[in-house]
Every structure is written in structure tokens, then in C-alpha cells.
Length: 140
Image (cartoon, rainbow, N blue to C red; front, side, top):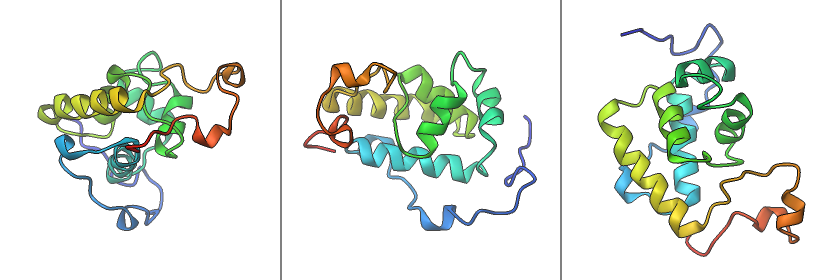
């Protein structure tokens, strides 16, 4: 097993202390809680550079740098269960928890009707309202 530096050679950002440790995956209720959990795992991993996070995830075919950036800034959730597991793997989440977090992703994706295509250049053609309302639902 490779031991990872908690700060990746950078000064401590102090962000982790401001975040709440996530609930167990089976108790995640909605997009906001899932997004907050992903941010926590990223910060708990020492907030590695996004290119390094992509490498740890298995490459850009599993977790593109742009997707990683949107996930860690809480602008988007992973595009798929596979991308979620790749992100969590890169953050050092233990293997026995990956399936549970994948199930939590599936529940949120199903209940919130997440647009799995991501924002993309043609998003304005799909949704014409306020973009801040696009990926929300009553349970989020």
C-alpha cells in the first residue's frame, strides 16, 4: 500500500476543520449531503492536486480533471456510480465502503433525477430556467 502525504507538500488549508464528518452512506438524504460528503473525503485525503486525484482514481477515463474540479467545489456530483467510486478510491475511502457509497449515489441520482450529461456546452438548450435551479429537487 502506498502511503499518501496528507498535505501533498502544500501548507494545510484548514478547510477540513470547517466540514462536518459525513453520515453513514445509508443515511445520506439528497444531493447536498452527498456533495458535502465528497468534499469532506477530498479534504480528509489532504486535498491532493486535481491531476494527482485523477491519477489515483485510475486515469482521466474514470475521473477527468474537470469533473474532479466540479465535484470538489460542490458544483456537481459525479456523472455515474463508476465515477463516484473512482473519486472515493482516489480519496482513500476503504474498499469495503465503496459499495455502500455507490448505493447512496444511486439513491440520490434516482430521487433527484440528476442530469448525468453534466452542464456541457448545450445545457442551455435542455433547460431554460435559472441554472441554479436545474439540478435541484424537493428532497435536496
